[in-house]
Length: 549
Ligand code: GLN
Image 1: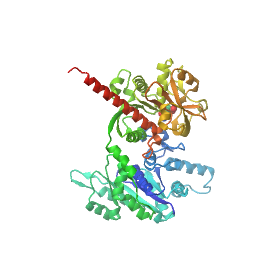
Image 2: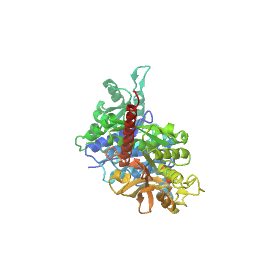
Image 3: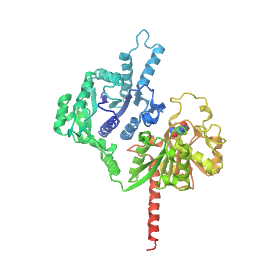
Image 4: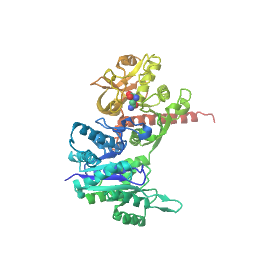
């Protein structure tokens, strides 16, 4: 069967959740036995989002092959249970970079290099390369931005051409739009959708299916109106109402028949969708038996998208414990040794987040110390783990003012440092330790207990490492090394033996947590946190019983 290509564009407004719709459609098609991948084309000039600040862009999602990508790829992996790669996220910057490189190499010798055909050809080649790998029956391509944006035009044009290159019957155009409710008029308005479809159609890419985001039920008269004005059948007007959890969206799309219409139109051989497991997962989110509160200590806490995968991994780990995890967002800059008890006293788990730069470092160190001294389950991720090592060195291993050379180049105890082979790197883009590396776990640790296996693979995004020259001193003073990268003898996981659950990881476990396979460390962290909550509650009730009447 020829690979089928689905293009998903967005109209009227940004932030309508195109990524979630693509991931949900992908999930439904996979549940029907098809092999599916999802790709995102981003119309900005950065070669990748790796150098963008999280306020601009949210989290940078890292793939197994070390690509720094858009956070929507995280949704694709979490929903579909697939692995994405560099090929699944392409930006305008990357397209131009490659075309200009080829121009310099003389690939187009004699020709004027132009947006059409050279840029559009390059865009098409990125879409087709996923299809031609023969690994997929369906490639879903999400076009970033909003229809009508100048920067989206080459992508829309490339998709228009592709429809003819691979045959119209092998392609489908889905447009995600907004149907707003005007309180003053007391009704849903279809005009923005009509205009958006008109703009898209003027570029020659008329939609086959419309997914309409709305806060309210879209009744049949409105569906009919949209169908009539936008050249689609009424069954092709799919309502996407606001959901409590993003994980409900595949179920809502199933009810609306999005997958059914896609299958009919593309003539795909598909069985009935089995979403029993998915439904169980959503039920666990909606009807948990327990609720816990975990503090997420970081410097971007006003912008939750900066920690997207961590938030989702906590949800996944929560469902494994039948528990809802409420996150208490703690700005590390506000945290001090003096107020830490007030700020973190009520939580039963502390997660210190990844990050770059020294803003808020002292607050992170205060959070680590508080968790260590009060036996509160602690999870340090990347910079969070590095902070745990710094705090341990200073307060338990007699290394006064120990630090990372990222923050203090002249520290007497550089417990976190560049490895010798990294010292000469000056470029910022794509030069970190990126992507999947192998880690060997040490017996008799909480990490080994959580994973239940000795050899693991985890994804990385950092420059600094635990300094091997000071490692023995830390171990001598009670720090436990729980995981090692044997190829380069790098510390991957640290623990504290005398603590109930204190785990710091140099890698990013959150990137590999999916609905189908919640990450074992997040599951274990939530479990430890739930245990502490139970202990606290039973101590409180004993204290109450002992009160004189
Ligand atoms: N800034 C640290 C480093 O580069 C940690 C990075 C991170 O938390 N992702 O090593």
